[in-house]
Image 1 (cartoon, rainbow, N blue to C red):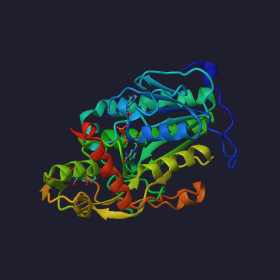
Image 2 (image 1 turned 30 degrees about the vertical axis):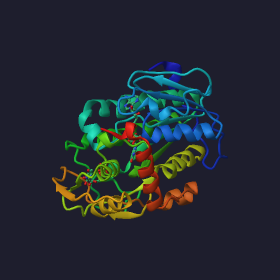
Image 3 (image 1 turned 135 degrees about the vertical axis):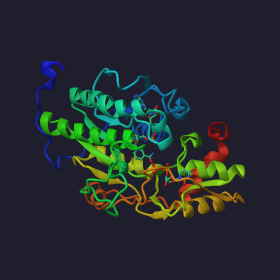
Length: 335
Ligand code: NAD
Ligand code: UDP
């Protein structure tokens, strides 16, 4: 660490006016959520630098931005230090494998990205005096014993279980972000994102929504884990991105839950997707993964009051839009 760069600067005053986001760095910007965030920032007039090593993302997600002179894709592993020229108003740190299948495949990479990658992204934000947004997750609550989950709940995480590389990486990233804020005066916010779905998900990432859509469309059995009574609360990607941007523009340090409190069982989700796809696929009950959370539902009172944010997309419309995207992009949605 270089001496002059570690000088503390004052903690930003609470309630200061909303900031302009003229130039943003988005780590993980070639992924599912990150690419939508890049799109939205560009649409709002920002210049965007995406930093991504394409571990679980795809350059094609950025096809609409590729020829835009105000967009740059920096193919880089955030575990290696990085810099960008010129001023930066926002560093949105989304880089990390995010689906259970991906982080099972890349456990060391996931831990390194949550730890060293977060350190490098925080350093960039601090050097530039930029607002830093950490994309944390509802997984910090583990298999929750409090329901719905409020930000004050500390969670129930198995530190050596099959999800630990992700959960503990994000918990460490939250602790590091908090230390940068309190010790160095970095301007940070932690958002805890709950299950998000929408166009650009990969069926190969193994998550329930893309799996069920791909299976229903192909007439294959829908693989419901366990008896399907475990619950999740699904938020459409445009709503999640709007929440991330509201947090970026505000002054609240978080953590703030971002999610849609409409809770449903996984069996109900499978049946719903099958109906929307007009599919006759059977349901196949398969082994439930270890440590799979039994329930998950955000309490979003803080996001409502601190950010004036709430999700607006109804599940039926969001799923139909996602199914239509899968139908229109068969070349991208094969495994
Ligand atoms: P994703 O896998 O589609 O995107 C992650 C992106 O990060 C990919 O483009 C990947 O290539 C990139 N990446 C991974 N490691 C990297 C590294 N070391 N250096 C540079 N780039 C790297 O996942 P997603 O669903 O878009 O999730 C994005 C972020 O949001 C993640 O941080 C995830 O933890 C968080 N999140 C997502 C959800 C969700 O439901 N999608 C829920 C909670 C939190
Ligand atoms: N799931 C399922 N069938 C699948 C994929 C997932 O039943 O083909 C279940 C999974 O066991 C979990 C829920 O759906 O209970 C949500 O899983 P996902 O991977 O989408 O998200 P996460 O577990 O990270 O919340």
